Amino acid sequence: METKFERLTFAKRFKTMLKVDFKRMFTMPLVYILAGVSLALPILILVMTSTMGGADPETGTEAAAMFTNVWQAISSVSGGESSSMTMDLTTMCNMNLMYFMIAVLVCVFTTEDFRSGYSKNLFTIRSQKTDYVISKTLVCFVGGAIMILMYFIGAMLGGAIAGLPFDMVGFNAGGIVACMFSKIFLVAVFVAIFFIFSVVAKQRTWMSILLSCGVGAFLFMMIPMMTPLNANFLHVIMTLAGGAIFAVGLGAVSNIILNKTSLV
Image (cartoon, rainbow, N blue to C red; front, side, top):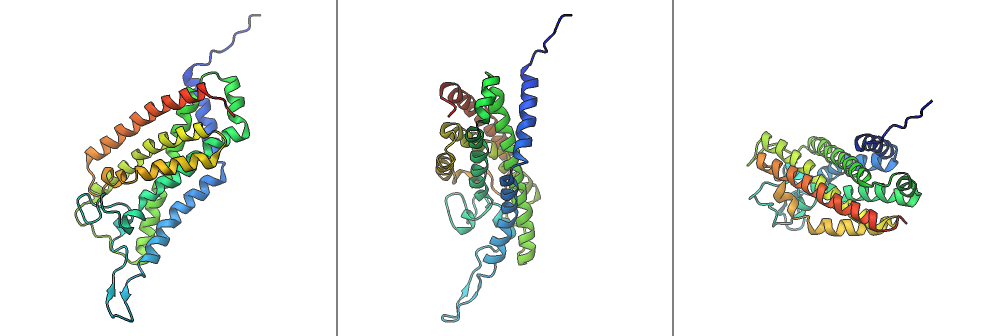
């Protein structure tokens, strides 16, 4: 009787890798901790800062609250008072903080593969590392997108609790939808960057997080410019194209690093 071996195509390998990565990610307590923090953070920020206003008992002058509108916790209006070149507290303490938390997710999730020896066992069986890079990038993108959405939900809840207005000045509901899509697509750019540092650092999680947050801080001013509250279809297309280009380009670089360096 002739024995036939099934040929493992890229599609079959990738499907298996993707299934394993999704299972590994959503069995990690860190994912749920970060999702919970993403939900709670805007609630705490909006509720606490909304109480900062009131009259100074010594001078009698009225102190303005840091956030005067719910949507300031999401982003700023392009060309408005809090533009990409004006780094005030509302610009620093809005949804853009999530990209630093996404750095933690990507770095811990990836470096854990090297610390546990999973990557070494995996690459011993699979000589091609392309499916690993693509799978990790896609799964981390989904995880990052979930954190962005959780922050949005938290901002809406926090705004309602704090009694802040939901008035749309200088933008409309379509701009908010485009803004959210732009922020989600921009996650792919940062995931690709953070993943490179993760495969460079290997099992040294602290190094990957340090490098990722350093580069993330350098690119921080780009985020409000690419994802304003008055975003339009062009912003969505630009961030989608940018995310795809970075994911493919930097993914290829990550693949080269994995092939040219040791796995420990």
